[in-house]
Length: 87
Image 1 (cartoon, helix red, strand yellow):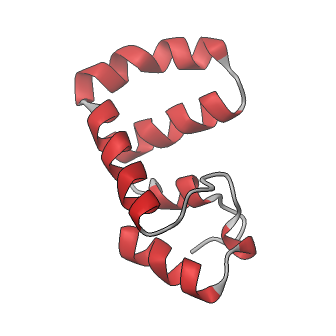
Image 2 (cartoon, one colour):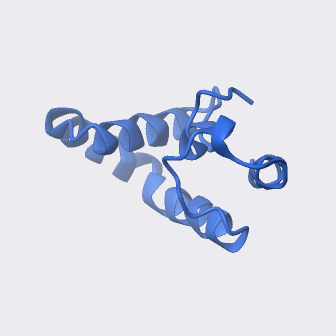
Image 3 (cartoon, helix red, strand yellow):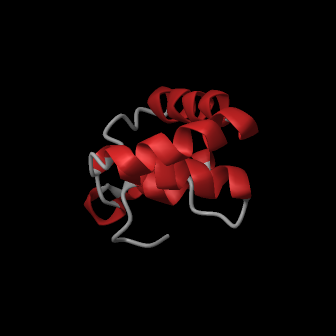
């Protein structure tokens, strides 16, 4: 895992179009980039990214990983193991 990534960035780190799009959307929301959000909404609709994103966040919450913007380097060893399980 990249210690500089946030929890959500690490979860969505992949070569998959679905996961890359969700990652871009999460970054746009985090940065309050309205234009990018507007551009990504139709793509998220097309690939059903909303359902996948919600499921991923549910899994993280069940693993008691609720601070999606926390950097991997700030997580305990046990939390990092749970991130790997979620991925």
